[in-house]
Length: 445
Image 1 (cartoon, rainbow, N blue to C red):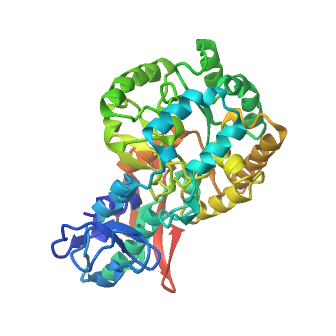
Image 2 (cartoon, rainbow, N blue to C red):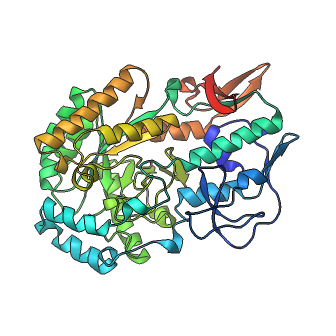
Image 3 (tube, rainbow, N blue to C red):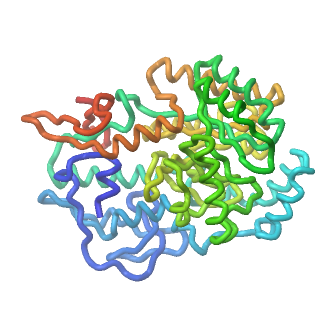
């Protein structure tokens, strides 16, 4: 039950002896693991709640840490995966008439004829009540990180350890990561891609372009190769972006076969669904190395929920790179913000947990000077962070390669020191978790 914890930190097993104490009840629901950490699952002690709001049982008070072991009243792996895979959302999804399957189908049929102002009005109606959603936490939910940090404190207490070694999250000891991605929705967005690459290059930033392979617009081999030749990345964006990819399982598996064919034709390693629709239980049909379709906190997306983490995680053999910041469309046309203040607040919260700040910027929505200037301000801010060695700006495929390599690394004791073994170890760094006045801190060897 400590697999997610060891995988998260890549620490030696001897520092992560965790056990389930007692038999969990059959009832599943919400509880806490610390004052601000809402979990979902079953408990062997205490009662769970069907709602994340109100007074919740705190399972941290039931934890016992002594003699080198930590005993918990819940299965850690189950709790973490319930969040990452959005199982907590289950049957509690609140849907409006405008979110029904029929309404979605009608919307996508009419979408090509609707201007942004009309679409904005419809989407605001669909998203009504988003500010009242208590969980996941807006604008960035870091519950998975907080769960692991709370458990790390308990493990240190149980082992009477002043320092716990682990493999640092990002290469060269960099404190966080950034990935910029562009979802190309329509002809005007496709035609703006060369100019958008010029903008990105002016800040020495490379990004990925997610292309819709059918119906939306024509794609030539030379167009795709030009993106790749300039050092950018090409990925597959849905099949035809009609909002129906996950409408039913049979249709999804049929479409997935065609999506996989386009992936091979594009030489694409990654995939993202249209409008971030998703069903992680069906991902086994996708033949990609990584996916980018799961939002961190989906308050402003058609499908609510969120994975509650700012770190990559595996969904079977596919690595999920979660969308951890607000999309440009939502920032401009739902929140009516044309500065990067909101993004900066999200970046700060992600960097506090040393996570991945991933952005979706549509070529279609930065054609106007005001929105384009906002995007340029973001690039300037990210480039400044990089110049101060405060983040790693990487292509999604580079994040995927690193996280997969890190997942195969392990710490080995050599005398009084710890060394890293595994592919890519030359870029990895040994870090230590310490407690400073009860507060968790990280430092390097």
